[in-house]
Length: 506
Image 1 (tube, helix red, strand yellow):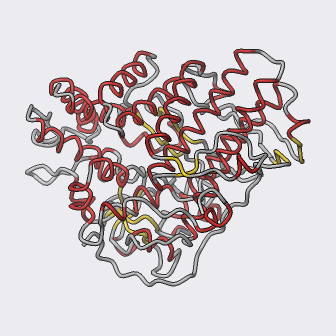
Image 2 (cartoon, rainbow, N blue to C red; image 1 turned 120 degrees about the vertical axis):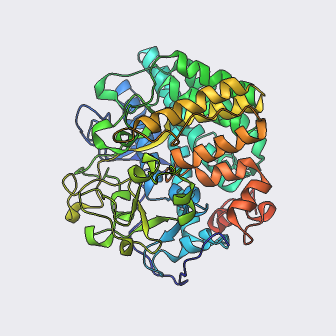
Image 3 (cartoon, rainbow, N blue to C red; image 1 turned 45 degrees about the horizontal axis):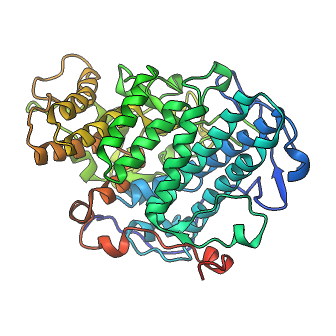
């Protein structure tokens, strides 16, 4: 069995779902974007209702519209539970929390969710809200008289965001409606399901067009906007997921050719506020504490222990902890304690973690901040960004593609860069048998080593389930156990609300 923790199934829940602040039809925008520090780009207050025919008139409004599109995926990244689909549905975590709390996550965890599941419905709703905002930008900004470079950049940002949302949708649901126009007619509202390959073609098209116009970097006031490298990275990932190995490698090489990315010296720094938007972050969703309207990261509370005002969700499994290497003398891979709280080891605030804080004995540390940064009274308003893609992830994807192309030397070179950084993050002198370079050139053994490295390097970053699915039936069913059937359980059901509303898929 994949999970061993007992959980009740009831309808109680904690936490409210953020309300939509944009709509995709009729009235185009109802938004409030806030001024932040120089490290974030959502910089201006705008409140009120704007009709499509009166709003898109100048560059300021174009910027406000694209900023609102970023705002949509910021909501989607925490309140609509990418962590549920990426971590909890995998062998890396269980729901956690009190047994009956957010019970609908339990059904996803146990592969029993139906079309009325609230978590699934909420995720779908927020995802298509982001797509709707992107579609409005793509459709309306071209007619604005403004600087052409800025115009093209804004359209490129919107295309990236649309591709990012569809990439997550196609990997969670499989076939989904491919909506590419503003929701202004029956034809654009009632859209049939598109096949997975068609959705990927659109993702690649959007990302290619985005990469052609996006800058390689921004000034500090625009930190966090999507870059050329982000588009190339997601293009490479989309190709990897389709088994297009050489194309994936080519895109990853183009990303590296920008010269903008590299590994941080210390692995743990990736998960600290002090290193937001670092050289390792290829695509990072921005959060800010203390904003009105809300822009904080609620994972800081959802994943924290009860003693800090938290709900202790997304609890790591013993299986995940066991995946980290241990030397013959007992020292662990430093990434374990950098990312996971375990009994008797230092927690975020300097105290020792207690296994009693979690139903599995473990909690994730990567999306939380110490109380010195965000006190318990404000726990749900965190300042830490969510990094969707790191350069270490790129290196491991590149290693995987090279291995499938039977280029073992290049595969090992990229894999070992990640392992060497982890080894160098060890305090003091690392034991000789901990995180040693991988030397095998056997394709099957190297594939296994790369898959294992992805699990430990990217633990609790919401990628594991999607990795298992793309690696195929044998890998997925071995990891997830007898309750999981690849052919029937891989994708979540289309929400009943969409089936009822969308006449083209009834």
